[in-house]
Image (cartoon, rainbow, N blue to C red; front, side, top):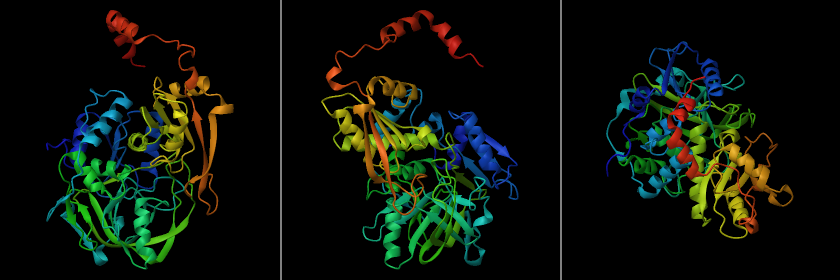
Length: 487
């Protein structure tokens, strides 16, 4: 099989997006809140298609020790990461459909074990270990410490079944040789970790801090239980990922990674973790004791790059890939659950890629819209901490909030088209959850034309596709002049 993507590692990817004008290099910002604030301000000013930000000469650190934000925060960068041509798939739904088509046609490819790789250029062991060798940021003003793991991959192995999981979970530096990681209940990495800890055994772990786009996408995607994200990323790439065997953990380690931390999560040591500004835009979850990660070895390339994600009140620098990856995952799960005629799915950026989710269907029978809503409100990846699930007809683009709100305002009668579901899967990161009862409620909203009125509902007032084509043929230059005019 030919390689489906045209880059080999993160550095190769950055060279390519730089050539496309999709990368901005920033020098002189400090790791203590300045980098996070600059990133937030850029993405709030330009939430769509802002460049990736590569910070160098970070206060107190050598030139070349860099922090990257917004790696996949544009359709062009995301398409390049997946080997998809944005010109062939210009809309979000077209790009999403192309990705899902690719995902259905590739076979997972297990990684290829190699003896050496660039990540071995520098090695810290024993007393030489120092996690603050790197410009680890404080992302937000009220964070409880420096977070080395945000856009990262946390690698664990199931002790019973043997399969390897890679998930994106936050990792806080405790001191030079110890760290902490918060993993929400129900996540695959949490389930694997807790099997070790409940047995009184340390859990081997490897943390990929400078991660390549494909493995990062796999770590964010809802890969089926029992399938390793390494295999999934290899299938998307069209060839196996090259990995080393971890000296202390036996876990696969990406040979081309920027930074990898090897260690073990201890069953008998805990420290307070957090708070951290999270995906929902709050310092939710406050602080809590988490098991200590004792670091055994650190591997890193010359001039290493930290891949970072600063979550703030939306919009922020990693919302696009969150929404895209989770929308694809939910669409897949709906089809696997035999929900027919799904035409589109979008988990909205304004809902932090979780709390406001829309499904477009072609109604096939009485109750179809309600069935789609119930399934979409509970299936992964939307089942975790969502608030609102809206179902719309197939003339509505689920990624377009104008379309969605219009459908809600004209096709949804609140008296009969809203339902509340109680005792759903939540998290202590949910700002409306208090104490240890980690439930939430959520609304399902049927914003479809009533099935019994689908043939006699008032017609939509808009220009027909055929007449639009005629106008473009007749007035094409005028449209080009108007739509391309700058500010």
